[in-house]
Amino acid sequence: MNMENTAVSKYTISFGLSLALNSVANALLVVVKEKSHTVTAAMQKITGHQWVTHVAIILILFAVFGWWFARINNGQGPKIAVNRLITTIAAGIVAGGLIITGFYLFAD
Amino acid sequence: MNEILLMFHVLFGVACIITAVWLFVDVLHASEANLNRIRGLSWAAAIFMWLAFLIGGYWYVTFYPADKAIILKGPWPFAHSFFMETKEHLVIMLLLLASYLPVAAANNLAANKEARRLVLGALAVIALLGLMIEGHGAVIAMGVKVALLAGQH
Picture (spheres, each protein chain N blue to C red):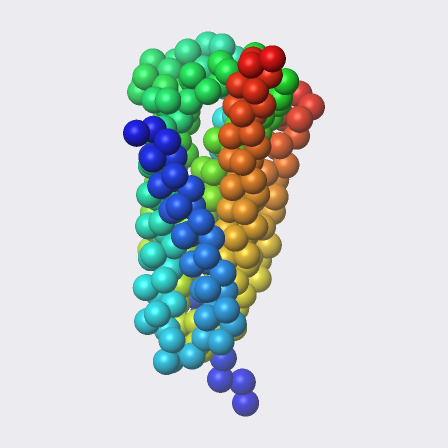
């Protein structure tokens, strides 16, 4: 008989999804700010340094989406299998890494 | 003073990588006996990463512009245009992953194979991405060195 437990906490799933989402958002923000001087200037103005603003935006989004995902389904969080969560996180991180590396290697 | 700061940045980054590798082995052998240590070490890895990030971030904003100017005039401008540019953004993903670690490790890893796989995956990425970012740091430091050496001739 298999006694293994396969459930994980709702925050493991919600912050895992937020991690995947924000890995891609982080990369897209790199592309947007590098391509638009207006965006870079606005980010510079907010905290005094565009990179500090960039970090603040991603950390805030990570926290907000993590808490928000945990509240859907009447507070039970998203219902997805852990295997699916692992694939989603891996896809988000690989996509984010490739966008950043590819951008500075080829497009910048 | 800024060199001392930079050394602490590297020190905490290496501490995060070593903790991740230690945790990887501990999670592979997760049992009721080592669950508390796993959870404590997960917090330690996250705290080491945050310290490395905050110190590095302060150094980057305050002192790096001078190094950047030296690098861009030297023979290795890519040390900034590729290695620093990718490092300063890839490290944000590493920070998110390290912050996520204590959340994932709070599950009962001794009884939950799926949760173990999730944490092992996160730890593997933290260790590998951390090593890559340490390597980027080495290239950036070398970019300054070769520029200064080139200026002497």
